[in-house]
Length: 553
Picture 1 (tube, one colour):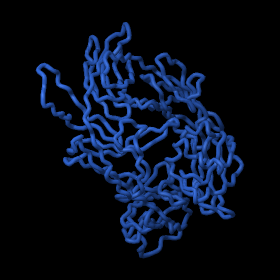
Picture 2 (cartoon, helix red, strand yellow):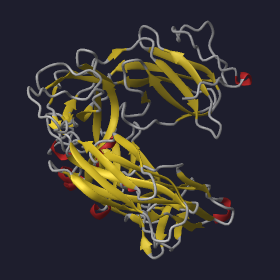
Picture 3 (cartoon, rainbow, N blue to C red):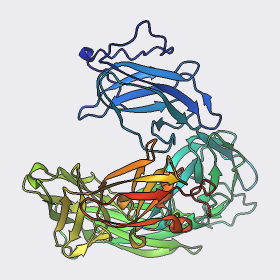
């Protein structure tokens, strides 16, 4: 967040004191005024000393800051005509922005302020953050200090649930942990990375017998070792969930060994390293692999699913190799990790629509879509003036494409790797890939407006524009808009295509990622076909308030 003052010539005094309304004289007639109140969502009570930031919506945004008084009030005075947004923060609460629906999870609304206009009575609502706590003990009930505890939130990628790392903490000397800073929602909890090896008591030992090693491994609540078996814990705003406890039993570590396979006839090889990652968790370890045989010496690991990622530089070009294994009780030997060369991916960005010469792309970025981290700088390059680009050292794998900026009135029209559609399908890079990546932007997106009614009365709502079912996995195709006090909404940058419109009283934008989220509401959806440019207006009925988002109607 920027904290820069407005220009002195603008004379933004902003009433930065806590008693923001206590002004000695009214502002000049040509100056505007924005004021409101910050409330606790659950209690509907005013919040003191919340930090409210007023930002201009310009190419070079500027900020002013006010603190709420004992009644939760704030004000900004001596404002010139322009476009503004309001955001609010407070310790112990989830950050929020002002929007017409008052939903803390909603997008910020742009406030258009005319010369001399006063906008008061604006309401910003904050939700309390939450916490999860518990204790981690070993199989004998003794506390385990130094255990990393991860709180993970579910996301849906390509229609499948995955868990994404969120806040984390460590157990103290009594094995206790508390992870805070959570907002309302569902979470999985996992433990890993015990800082001390387990000790298993052996009353007798045989001379010459190798010492058995043990490991605590990793675990999801409630005592399972796979992502799909993890229980999701529902957390309400401000709720403190306790007794999320773990008992970690020791298990024999098992051996694994293998070899990095170097391409025949390879030139000078430098820095061969193998990273070993748990498939369900982000913890990993790195092992240097020495020449000339590039053997991965015998390691002792807890049983489970792993990804082995080998990296090397050969003749100045980067190579990478992947191997997925399931390490059972007997261990694994002679695991082969063949190195594959990276490629240089060339392409071009072009523009369709009115006035294409007024727009020029700036960058193209590739992000791993297979959860295999990069061992190097991000794959991001600048676009040349003629629209061409080249991304060096792209490893084989599945990649998401990000290019931009998208024209202010446009959309991403197509992305193709050779003749393959990689806008709505995965882009898989192989060592043999030689086709160019062609990205097309259009400067003419679909626009339309409409109204939401509850019965015969205008309704405040979140309007969701959802693509046809076969494209519901495309997060970038969704659009949301908030209605004004007259129930009116507008969409200005939609992608042409087949959609359904839904009007929710409340909407958590994270729910959209769930492919099953809209199934209970399909009968409320209004089908629309959007074309480039203006489209016909639409009228929607508010989904009944008794049917909260995510529940069966």
